[in-house]
Length: 292
Image (cartoon, rainbow, N blue to C red; front, top):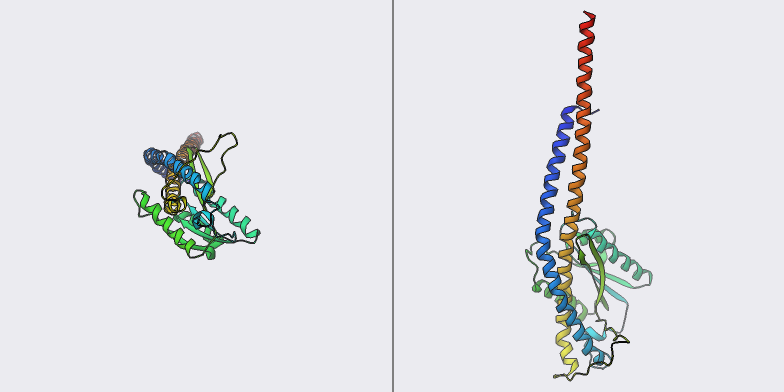
């Protein structure tokens, strides 16, 4: 049985841990508000940009001069998985859920005889994926030095992806990230970004609106598609940022509660042990006095 001194040290250590987790919870809560606002503000622009390009692409998709980012290579053999995760842990299942979705997609593609490559954005995703797919990781981007995410970060990633696509290194690129829903709910999401997926209009949407473009659709798309790629990646980074702080806030709240429960149990055991030792000493004193 542990001594009273060891128990006191254990209780003090647990209390110190509880203070740390409580502080981390409060920091995550303060950062979550800004991150959530940024993610929600980016959604309408990204969705409208996607809708506008889809409208233009509907008429240009079958033309011979359609941009390759829209038409694709005509093959479906080499897949690039752009996996965006966090730079830090202590956030519950946030990172592992994104990696799990990407790993499942990779294994499914490999079973179909496809070739898979990984582009990792974030240290935690890279650390988890390299255990099984180290040779398939073609690039790893670390954003730990970035204090505040900006569109320039997404543009840099988009340019790297486009450069690899132009070099013929892959046929299809899928973006993996976590969509923020609430503090307790973050949804791992996979979105194909190269070639662009053009959704057909709904059956009850009514007649499609006709537009005349100047310059022609193909020229507009050749300029808008790279920017749309950066916009979708930027949205994913902002969603990830909000999801990370939401997951970390929940994880640290649970850790603080668990530490409180542990402190109460340890204190109860300490008091019982101390009382038993005092009782034993009293019995020995009384027995000695009676013997005299």
